[in-house]
Length: 266
Image (cartoon, rainbow, N blue to C red; front, side, top):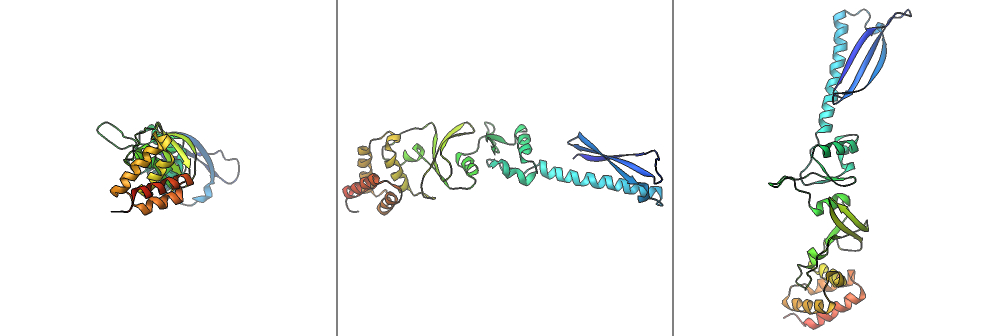
């Protein structure tokens, strides 16, 4: 409410008890919404000096303006963190109507909509506002539930022959399955079992199980894995543990063959 105005006028005396009609005009951001008539008996200030009664009315008007302006300043000026993603419900800390607040912040350029009910505060750069990182958008989408980004961005760094490129980011999680688009970027979500803090050896097992998606033959993967095991790139115990906990029987059999072929640690 930008302010509360009172307009007082005498009401024709139709009864023995004189009354005063007070009309409160309610407005938000300078736009009048409605007015509320209230009838107060004149006996409220009967016998008071006129100046004192007027001070009571003025004090009431000031009190209403003061409270509403402080409340609006806190509601309409949220302290957004650049690069952070927000769900609509996250905005409740700054206002009773987070949906309306989100629309206004988007129109002001303080937020950008990544998907329905999902927003982020852009970061500044010399090329203009920059989007939030993938992991930050996913953090807000999953509301703190664990997830892991896998696929070519992780597989191709293992040095096992994978050079694939996906049009969608592969994300394992514990809640959703399907293809989603956030901020124009495509994500392929799969609800599968995975460690919350995956070691490098887990990504090796993940690649073995999805070698066809990665565009590399299993025979080539086995040859590269044996060579890197001999180089000591992987913790052999971790490779076996990840295969047992998260791989299929076929994957575990492949890992055992590679460990045997690599021979003892020199």
